Image 1 (cartoon, rainbow, N blue to C red):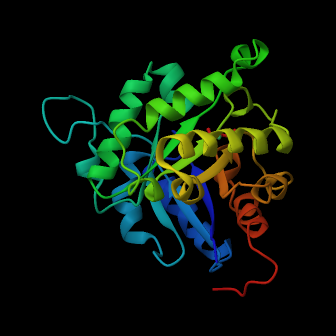
Image 2: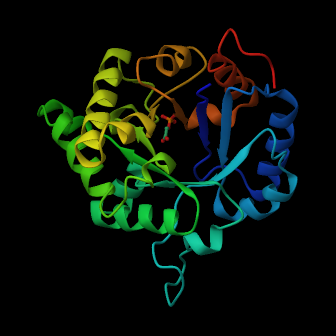
Length: 257
Ligand code: PGA
């Protein structure tokens, strides 16, 4: 049975206290299904306390970013080594990291490698800006970000990698992509993975959609061809809405876990 993966990216929302209250609410409200894996990505500061509070059978934790060196004089950074044991997943190359903080494909690739080296799973985000889309550059951008992001990865590691297709113009705008375009983008992503690592890897890599996912559109994306799950920003901050998104990823014929 292949599980759907639903990731909630809380971004820079919630103080530690608010995050704890929210997790409490979510643990009460969110359904628990054997066929849906749910990952919560709070801010780094809240991770430690939430890791003690979280029901590990219901949720996994993820970080929103990390640095690629394991340790050293890098003021203000947190390494994958320091996250080890606290989280299962680390989001890497989110468009806000790329576009607000100037992270390059090279930085992103180094972070993917650091996350794998430290025994966690990277969620590599790729996607075109509105301008690039207008210029007909979508396929190029996806190619470049996937190929660069997976640099120096081995085919054995690919099953631990999640790639999120997140068109930048769809993030936080309410202007979500058309499911048919998502299917095309996901096919392209698998095609590039196939070219680099072969057929088995192209099937094994998990691919998500993200960008203005909410409870009204989640099922059209999560059940689109080739899509393994969703990366949810704003809609993951409301327990009722996020619970409904989890619900939408649950297959009809699978029992509650
Ligand atoms: P959004 O964000 O769901 O608020 O559009 C998605 C993301 O940034 O991962």
